[in-house]
Length: 527
Ligand code: ZN
Image 1 (cartoon, rainbow, N blue to C red):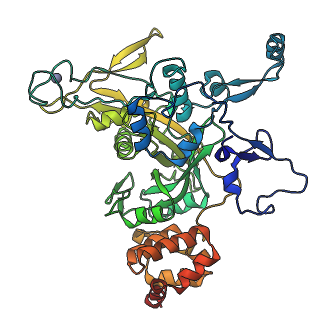
Image 2: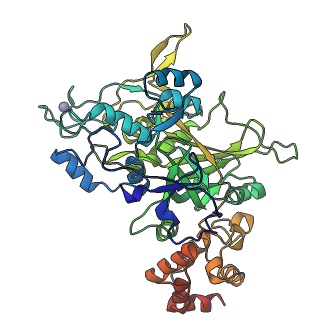
Image 3: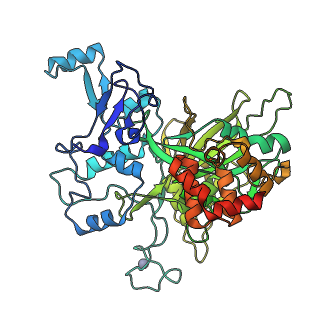
């Protein structure tokens, strides 16, 4: 048995919590009462769940190299160990049918990619791990040959280092190195299934600048990934903070003046803060809100099935952002496959309510962005396939379309490509019992770059926030942490300790922080 796979739930179909996450919590804190029944699940390592070859069991050198080089997200390591089989309750008819065959069970396990099951549960796309398992079950049967990477990364550029007898591209090209025609497919899977905002106040705070100024807003979402129980082998992105970069908001759009989001030596304060708090970049969120003028707080529904969900400009932007944040995967020959970077839009829904919608663009769209093949058009529902130049080779692009006789036909996309072909939709929501990582509340310290609505992050505002509560509660605010980092008063060790206090609130860390030189210098500055 694999100890890391042990999960507990309060009902057979209830939410499964990893046992390791429960360590150190009291019975009361877990909400358990005397007499409650617990259901334990685990993976039996002696009987491999899937009858397939994995990079571990494969003997080929390439597979071993990839395995060593690829550091996946913890959620991916966790989910790939599970088989994701769904125990379906059989109908009376099925029970008679299978019962008669001697199975004698009232449930029948189905694969996590089972189309019928997904359709029945109204799940639009299978999860990434279900997709990998489906491909792997086809590519790597146990009695087959060596290991084959189930995933393939789309590459629409001219092959580098062609062995053909010609000058390298763009001086020469041959049939071997030129990319073949592209046939776009609606993507059957999604890299992230669900976006969960750790608390609803986060969205309210984010749209505040729009409420006060009427101009649109953009932010970077930081958080972590967890398994998502409502989709077989699903993943949810849990948003713990929205950082609002320096930007110019207009009534009909927004321009980011600082686009960096990531790690490295010149990482901006928000990226370093996120890393210190154990968070990763999850995606981008922006508003597209227009007041209806009815005086009842309702907004105009601009985005719907007959217009567009993401504009061609936004699709091109999402494609380039996804290409910038690749997903690590040991199931891909390049150790990378697509991206988990999501794009969230806050706009009016059909009822005129302010609502969130979450998307990703397809892996093919990322590849087209990487090969510099697409650009937005003035029509928000149409992307343009770029024209060939001396240095840009543009293959023919096709997509499937239903013609006037109801038949599926291949339609040429040069130059016009409907954006919906590139979109994958995600669900979103808020937890029933919110436990946000940052507990101080969003009103305790101003959010960055909100001068246009008269909010500023100042030493005085920091002093006020620290006076309002105990240090551990007061500093549990992402915006405050990023501001303290940008002041440059704390050493790296002291800042990491501050981030730990903000997220873990352990007494011994608080004592060390309060006694540190940097913290006391900070208190002197803000007095
Ligand atoms: Zn060639």
